[in-house]
Image (cartoon, rainbow, N blue to C red; front, side, top):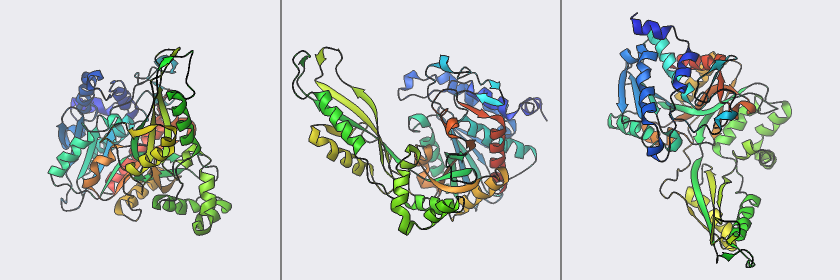
Amino acid sequence: MNQRAAKAHSLSLAEKLSRLVQFQTVSSYIPEREDDAAFSALLASLPSLFPNVDTSLETHKIGSRAMLYTWPGKDPRVPGAIFCAHFDVVPALNPETWEQPPFSGTISEGQVWGRGTQDIKVLMACILEAAEVLLGQGFSPHRTLHFAFGGDEETGGHRGARQIAAYLQGKGVKASFLLDEGGSIAVKMLSFARRPLALVGVAEKGYMDVKLESVSLGGHASMPPRNTAPGNLARALAEIEARQSPARLTRTLKAFLAALAGESSPHYSLLFSNLWLSSPLVLAAFSKSPATNALIRTTRAITMLQGSPKENVLAEQASATVNVRVLPGETCAQALDGIRRLVERQGVQATAKHPGQEVEASSESRVDSEGFAKIKEALAISHPEAACLPFLFSAATDTKHYAGLTNDTYRLTCLPQTTEDLKGIHGINERVRIIDMEKCADFYKALIQSL
């Protein structure tokens, strides 16, 4: 073992993640606001942290925001697999409110603290650690594996995953399946579930932002007209919140409920096993919680408001942004039309806020595929206490860029998470338990060995 490998071998997985967290790789829609040096430094640190990977795998640095590792398999004729993660993070607002500084990578109380420990430098570290250990044991996969890491997922993935996908497409790569971040191992999130649930995203909702705009005459606030631009906008927003989009059971949700039936108490098992009769009850029950409501309908969340620049001036224009997550089976255009029908009677105009940047809902991957079976087998080894269920993932990932490379795409963040844990994602005090990230690395080891 050379000196560099010996030094890296002495570092624990927690220490490696800690070092990755310390690079402030905050991505922005305005590239000039990013710290390019932090992104470069993170990528430059990987050879010393994972020397076996660096010396044994093919390394391709693509542009400034993408890193691809290719592990050639013994039989190049067998379709390979792609494992993804991203190494950019969102800003850490109000760092003084954190128990540990957000970019310190502090290791304390059996946890690694900091931005990226849950979303999602942890997966990058676990994938590379799994390969590092297996390489040290002399393992060689039967099929070719690709580890794809983008550095701008939080801003759309155009400089990262999109460039990696174009490179792989140019090489003629066609994978058996792809695995990226996604659902967690849900712990006590559903009171009727008898054990933790590994929620493997087999589909992903679409994404678009809608701008609502109302105009009226300005003037002095001491002589207001009967209807103002903000008033019209407020009525339109109230209409949006009062009238949700229609609820329905997608193919993915039906598969989820069928699997959940075997993991639930008798009453719920009966309910989920007879959807032909019970679907109205299921839809009504799922509508009551934000987490389950997102599984059955296109959601509309009001996120930004703007009106007058001064307290005593009537607004000539009032605007709002509605963040829309589109259920599979519906298009972004249809979602926009639904909002227009609600607001036009209030004199409010609805348009796409970022034309051309809408992301359509993904196709629904199979649960009877090789990829899903391999993921389920690996989970049985690393997390035997958890049930593996197909799931609809509500957030956005880099998977949209890889659609042409594989027929089946899955999304799993292999970490046990409670509702309280999830608050750290894009929030304060983001952290991961060391024992959980070690089991996550075990998951990837088992998955790689099966391939």
